[in-house]
Image 1 (tube, helix red, strand yellow):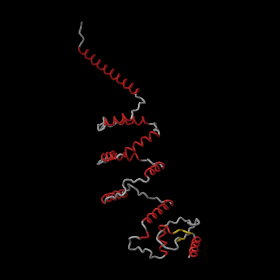
Image 2 (cartoon, one colour; image 1 turned 45 degrees about the vertical axis):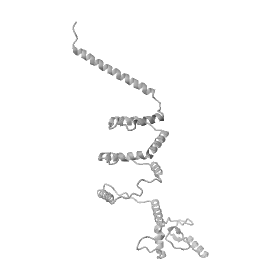
Image 3 (cartoon, helix red, strand yellow; image 1 turned 120 degrees about the vertical axis):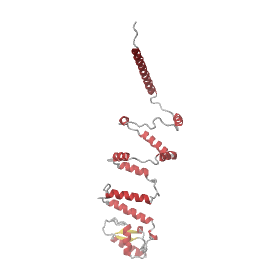
Image 4 (cartoon, one colour; image 1 turned 90 degrees about the vertical axis):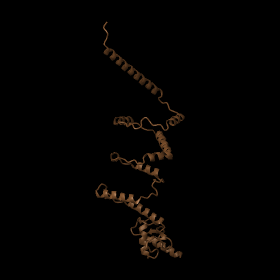
Length: 290
């Protein structure tokens, strides 16, 4: 009998090892599939979740430093297309995030992790491109305003340093000179409603500063002024809506009448805009009382 060459025996051994490995991998895949189907719909209890969390606390994850490729990112995004989150899950997520954010340790960790970090020019450009053409709807604006109403923005009472102010002014001047940014109110005009709102706000601000005590100005005369000058001063802070405040008639010419027995003060709340007839009636009533 002729003996077979050694090469044929070695090839057969290699093939046998290869097929054995394939069988093992196939068996492992089938077993995993069975296990996954067996665990389908199974939920862990809160106690087991806590135990797993305590056991893994402080350990470094297996995915640390690993970056997902663009292909896997696309696959993940395509798998999530068309999926809708229910309202219950949304509420659960929001409650969990709120509780997490209320924890001071969690906040400190986030702040310390971002300390000293600066975004590169590439990431900034990507962020700016992603925001181009993105407009916030009126509903979302209202929701944001309702959520943030009454809350401080975190910078309350904060004052910029002189160095930071100079830097900000230099950057803004450079941007305006090179036409990189246009002024926010360029070719824009306030509507009548906004003008009225602005006047009411300024009036309330000035009234809150206790006008009767006077301003710290060398040209401030206090009450040593004539009636005409006082009226001109009051018209700056008392807005004229073109309506008589007693009868409600729409008249262009209105008188600024004092409602406190002609006690001329610098408080605009003591005065009303009246038509000529109502002003005369007011003056007659005051004379009869005297």
